[in-house]
Image 1 (spheres, helix red, strand yellow):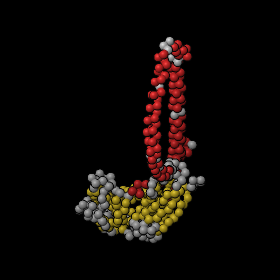
Image 2 (image 1 turned 120 degrees about the vertical axis):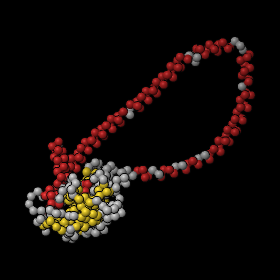
Image 3 (image 1 turned 180 degrees about the vertical axis):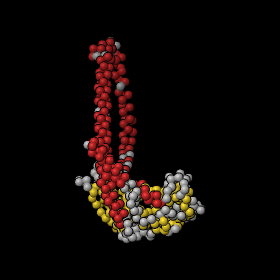
Image 4 (image 1 turned 180 degrees about the horizontal axis):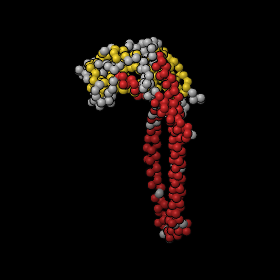
Length: 414
């Protein structure tokens, strides 16, 4: 089991390296940009760029975009980009289009040719690649907003082409759908005008092999499918979405991975509780209060008047015989009614019995705590198992992603 877990984690890491990266989904395409010149030698690269719109509002109001950065996108992982040069805008990025000459003399920059050689260490560089003009903050942390342009490399030259790179995003209403429930999985393509289909893939619970959830046609840049979540809490449900363009000459293929986790089952019982709130209607019972009012008014008037008139007569009898009084007190002593010690011991004995009952009740609470510990241990083991299964899922989906990337490269090459 330990070896299986280690292998699963290794495969998961390998899958991420091979070409799957969730941060890629966080990037948002806002349009295209025009390079100048439109073609040239690889050694010369680009001299200036002009985006077709301004940078959007930054994620943090206190950290606005201050410059644009031209980057080369790794075809195997769109989340990996290599900076080529930067552009200092002529005006506020939030109101004027990002435009200006490129400066690549700063630290961390390299020529277009050098960046391509990092992707292809040897052999010809021929193929199609994506360049992005990213909006960046002063601390160089944000590159989520970008403008895109595809270029074609032939020999030692490059040229801008009209084919547009696409960016695919995958999501749902919740990242943790309840166990055993059906939930929607949505894919959204950028740009929204891109036509084609999206295929959704996951792992089969029984065989562990990749299976297709379905293929949907894009409508207004979106496609949706319904899946059924695992029956085990905390178990991962990876979904790989692959976009196939209807016109490969106009748009590039793309893919995205999203992992959902089975959440606890929802309990619909709270929704029924409001119905018992109608019980306040029995508050109409105060109406019987009229009957007791008649009873006490008659009884007290009769009882006290008769009682005192009869009792004075016995008071005369003890007065006539004074000697009997000592014999009465002696008789009481014989009966033991005045023996307080016996009576008090009996009451204390009853109190001891009640105390014992209370003790047994408190003892009954401790086993519940023990059962809680057992549940906690079960949750820990379930979490460990789900980690291994989730990593295996990434491994298999990683293999599928690599195949998709290779196909994309093959289609992209002239």
